[in-house]
Image 1 (cartoon, one colour):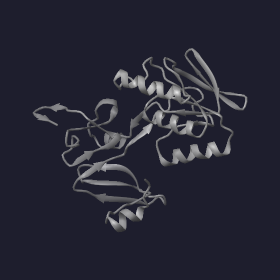
Image 2 (spheres, rainbow, N blue to C red):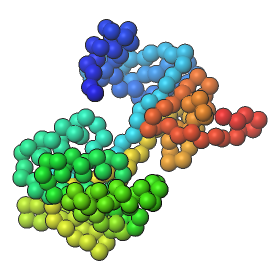
Image 3 (cartoon, rainbow, N blue to C red):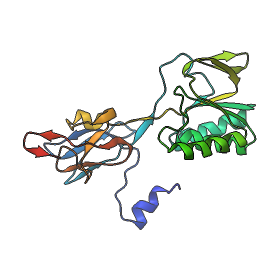
Length: 237
């Protein structure tokens, strides 16, 4: 669901400031500062601060991942870019790199559009985070819907093949018209790290069960945060 900014400002009384890029958290003076599109700076004080900066899709550093037609999906703008590409190009077959939630949802959506879909992943097990019998049910459902599944195929590169794309994996080469890279996300935690907040696994912001960070007045939630208990001296958080 997309809501206009006015809904938050007028109906909910939230001081919502769009197009304000926060570049610094000053923990000593309890302020956040940054810049607006016209280049002017701003600074806002806080009593309590919540960091909810989310995550960015991982794009492997491999040849060809920046070719036209190679997409990621995380933001609304990413979705619009995919929709525009499908409208402006002849797309018959899509290869999805990855088999997580986003990859599965996109496989379903693309098949509903009548497009051929192949999915590839480097590890041999289809959905290792799901109980095996349930994963088998999902696997069979995808096959019945015409999705081609290739496990144990690590992506090596993407290259052009005439006016199409070619995905080259371990033991597999396949032509397609669009590639969707859906291999996970990385937390956008650099702002917190620059402020000296403790990070946890995968560089996410470390929080306790109350989502409190290593600073008692700063909290983190969403894709940027990870529940991670750290013992520092006599304090456990």
